[in-house]
Length: 396
Ligand SMILES: *Cc1c(COP(=O)(O)O)cnc(C)c1O
Image (cartoon, rainbow, N blue to C red; front, side):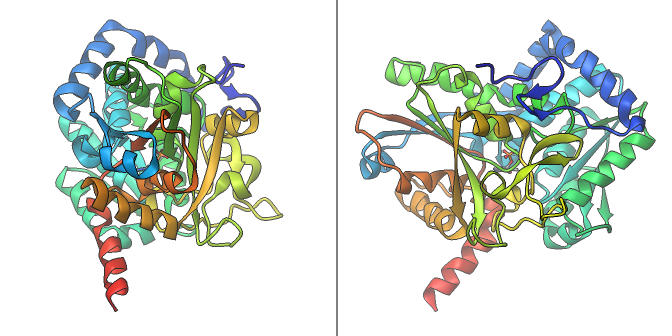
């Protein structure tokens, strides 16, 4: 079974490039050039140097002793939270800004929900001295003031999108419209393994550095490259794609993705796409989608802004359909409990997104010799207000 994208841009029945004709030149250019650029020696050299000296890679693979004792397995944490800007997102934006420069682009656009991808994009634009425009739903602009200010401090222009629900889906529509109007000088840095081909493959390749490192790091810790489990949270699915990538063809490695169930996958307040969705097309790509009977996209809900998306990358839809990976729905409450537990047991305050992956440890039984790798996609600084509110309630 081949879990990678095929020549036409599909993962099984999912993926593709369902684009308006006006977007054809941009997508065609990217499709025909991305592999050559990424495989060139000059790209690899500069990407690897920036990952090392600017991002701080390799990120450690940390043996979590107290967590291991509690759950009766050997638990390792892949520390993407230690990257510059606080999450895995910078791996993708560094790679895409280098591709954009190679394509001769002088202007970058991006969409953002909570602002994390917007900040990672504004960061690499400042690094390269390239103009940056970030589309953000007007509601999110109001809710995520610190990240809006970060982007501005980094020199980006933030454009509030007033259409629809004024959240991530609408921001993406705004960025796509901009790209259609600026096909020559602009590159669109998509923030996850979503969108038209080649984005899902492009972003997965850039994030695959995560599993590439896990292999050699685990070899030096344990004498073997392959763990028994890899666990990662899934919004669009880029940190999970990166953590799974070099294990896809190793069937003994069990892959577990966690979706945000919100108040429960059986309630309307959820973002559990695979548990509740059906196939459909959103943002130029066929995948699983949360939708009502008429095919209208339904508004997702999760306590975690980064998992609050009504779709999922086509690679994951295919891994789900073929059974290669398993996906669990994790509620707000289970994720919060996991975040507090990790903080107390290991001194690591995770991002709320990452906490969804840790919740699996409570729900699964492991054997003592099992090696379990949990991807810590980001750090919890940005979620402190949510954690503080929870602690205040607990003390009342
Ligand atoms: C954005 C984000 C996610 C979700 O995005 P994916 O593409 O699914 O990885 C997860 N964790 C953190 C810390 C994020 O910032």
